[in-house]
Length: 185
Image (cartoon, rainbow, N blue to C red; front, side):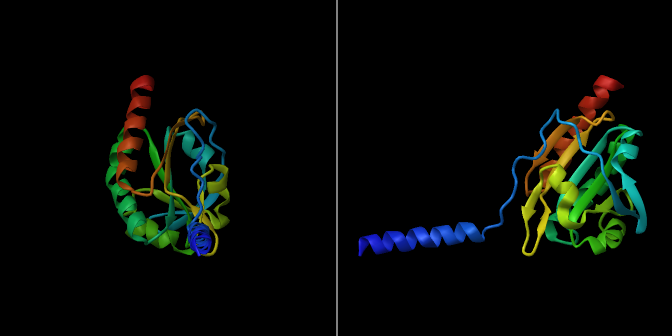
């Protein structure tokens, strides 16, 4: 009887763990080279092709991946990045959001939740997120995990930060951009 209970408990735990979303916690680390990419994006609701290499020619890039537009945590994070974008710009940095979830809504999201302040790119199939090692399994497909990177103009990752709570992303990315600015004027 005791063996059956232990087996049933082990089986239940195993099934529970299998049902949990799997995710990669090994995002590209500080010091790694950021992979270049070009994605369809929107700024203020207007679509365009966004190239990381082009953005880096203007200065450091705050690149943040988020699971899906118009979800509670992602909306809070977008509002926070929108409020901070002016400060990032004063330091010479630009902000880019990337999502693999509900990619058909990035134009609308860039307008309403990002408040026309920064570009949001669609990453169908989480292909770019996979290059940055920041994916997790959604209900039907792989989606981007909530990870922020600060990338120097030479393509070196200065900060790699993953946390599902959006609060600290702005603080950590701003600190990394300020540190870069202090060294490079």
